[in-house]
Length: 306
Image (cartoon, rainbow, N blue to C red; front, side, top):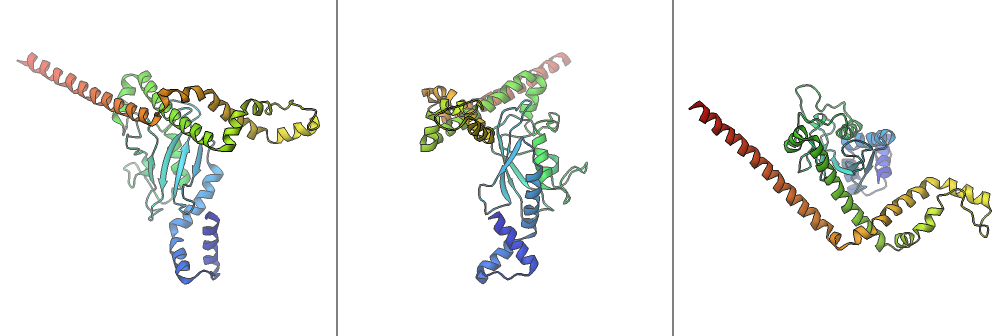
């Protein structure tokens, strides 16, 4: 579909007449708006410059202006997590900034419980001129979101004030809460991956042969009754990265098999909701305790002023 849209745009610019019916052709021309052309160009730039911590995915290949950004930080508070952001490029782009929403539950000062993201360049206007401008690109948006997990993380200008206050009061407690969010999402994803993998014949077969697969990651592995040693080494080395990745992923899943098959994780989605409910109760209790402290202090001040 991406190539198809690119072809349509080039045909329109070159004056080439489409062989499609008029109704279909007119709809295609209408869809090839300024936004679509900009998105097509910027997606190419984005793929060429995106960092190793990020990847993008189009749930619907026919909608280039809607995609998912996945950020997997290598270090810091949120290291080893996988955070998904839905990005929608509106019709008014590039005079209007993209709409961004985080769909992964995360404990972060600049991302609230509803997934709203506090990032200056996503603001339509900003007093310090750091907001959106037509000169900005999708690559800037991705860099900005990625930087929320490092140098752009701001505890002093927080959207999730409860998270920011916890960090300022007790950084270690904040780290523990952030890691607990990460752990719950990892267990949920692994449970889903295990369920899907075991339902697929090829994946199920690979899981049952994990020990056999692991030996193929060793370039010195030989079986004289199959291929010549040199030929086998060349084949294995040519596919080494792919084999190591598959072996590593399967090994991780295998190690967690007993844990994920335990009855306690039978309803991981229910546990996730219970954890969310408990966290909300904790937040409410924290707010109530803060109010109680403030009211008590006010009473003491009144008493001393009598």
